[in-house]
Length: 90
Image 1 (cartoon, rainbow, N blue to C red):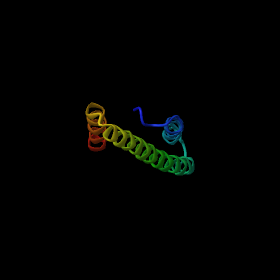
Image 2 (tube, helix red, strand yellow; image 1 turned 135 degrees about the vertical axis):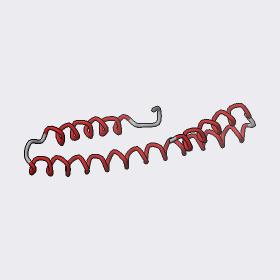
Image 3 (cartoon, rainbow, N blue to C red; image 1 turned 180 degrees about the horizontal axis):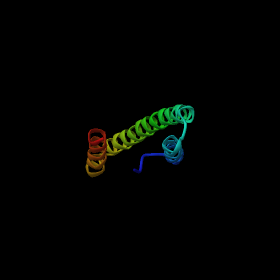
């Protein structure tokens, strides 16, 4: 997805590795420790994705407002359609 930052993608990879550690844990104590680590990383990923999406929507809204001020109906429609599609599809 175009609106997810590079840092968020790195966090997603870390989460993936943490999940693999949970699944590879042999003892109960190792599993609890790995699950705690995974939970923290998962919270960071979710927070980061929400922030990235919020930033992307704000940027799209600014572009939409600029197009409206210029009177460029096609560009305005393009941004309007893109933002509403992404908000309601996910």
